[in-house]
Length: 246
Image 1 (cartoon, one colour):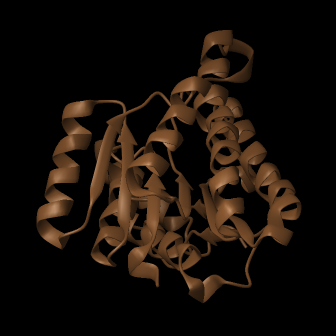
Image 2 (tube, rainbow, N blue to C red):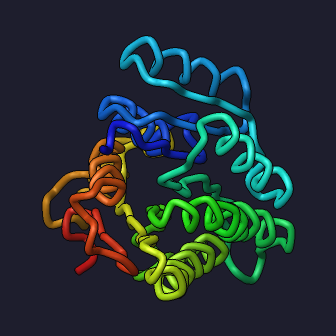
């Protein structure tokens, strides 16, 4: 049953990642969550445990480090005895025009947004194959399909995530492991809160539904792909963008 499953969520300290962890905890999943600051992620774990009476393991993990990412998976499996769902949500931006982009800004974004997805996905395959079941869900972005000026590194990383999603789905489908991605559009987070009202209105005007999405909108899509309700879905990118990209 779903309420016995263990889910790993990276980048769970705020925004979309925190909303994903919160909804899954509400649905009864046990959680292994990570972020960059131990104080923040442990506070979230405590809040989820108290609110929903679920088991939550929290760690500070640099997912762009292969050894650290793999160690987090190993510890999770040892702690819970299983790992059913991986949500690769951790991501950063270092925006800048291509002709001025620093090599370090390119590498940091690719390491965090793309390499980490490979490290963690590779690490969870063995326990999922042993269980003959599993779901890997990668958080991408609408800009992987649309492109976005000033985000060459970010767009490349998310495009790579979607290509990896399809390729891995073909590799492990015969083992009953599903691999999908969720591609958010413009979402109201603490990053967009820093924009002025005019900027927000301009963003909303580009969306057929006329408003920015919420982190909870993305969390609901992830929860669907984590559940048995999506048992026959793999290798797909689920766009959650209010019609911004069709």
